Image 1 (cartoon, rainbow, N blue to C red):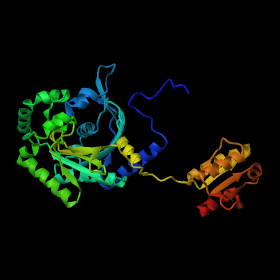
Image 2: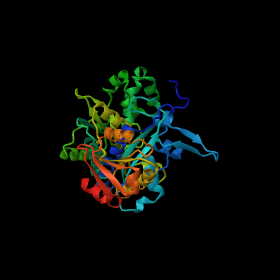
Image 3: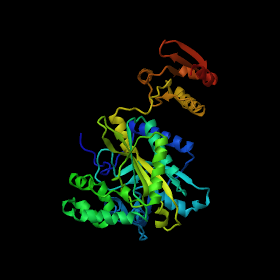
Image 4: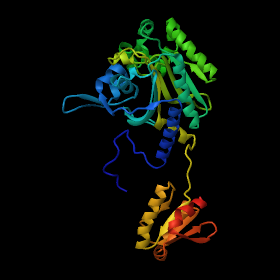
Length: 424
């Protein structure tokens, strides 16, 4: 078979068939948690001003330097396809005066995002994330609630061995002192760093702590830890969050090298992963943290916030690997078969009546052969078949056949809905 001329662009994918069933189920679970915890849904534009991300995420981040899809409009505006959800949500909060609402403001989304990165398993250039953001309050309890929501969503979807990694990366008061200490340590070992980390040492030294290269990991393992350089405020905030996690009996690991890839984070950062049988975490399913300075960076007043996001495709990939089916196949109960033009016209009307009553019914209105329709009904595993032939249509009747026993019963068309409800 020749290769089709047009295919999806590299790193982008079609969603259909079984995958939509996974998407729908994840959406239902996320929506149910959002409703319970009083989060309002928000959908921001797919395109935003590029400066929103260069300012908010940080010029030295991999997302801004390597992964943003940028375009210039005919009017000369520089726009970017949104690579993440938090900066647009905070922009919306400022723009629409949400600071005048009762605080905190709780928002959630289930949206598509774009990053120009090397496509690999569970990672695409166009991808879906669900996120929860709590804006306007700094209470450590809210950090814990965000972690708890994501943890329980993953539990609800069938994940069992979940690992929470958590850290504090300080704030604008204590982090600069730690950066100086870290840079001093790394400068004497810069010759052994990978090319990316050599660049990060000048632009964004904290990101070196997150490097996965083996030679860098060895250097990082002996580096000064930020936990030993936190100010009292950040130290107390982290202590309270951990106490709440202990009270909830959530399994967490304090990871001093967890920094996340975005510059707007302050204090709490976290990731939730699935552990293998050997106890090793595989790829983060969820990540997030606190971002108390982001609103100010974007030109608003100082406004605390905390949130996170989960990768839908990554979650689906792992569910399939573990052979966890999170949706139930619903077997149809009724099939409508018709023979002849008059019956076909009446069948269209019958299907519409079933729709109005919210009664699922399967049909094959394009087929003329009763044999082929009965074969399809058998393949679908339906319990009952409604058979409408030319004579039945003239008599305003229809046959109801029990597919298990073969017994048939005539029903007046005007009583059809009422009679079918008895069988269902």
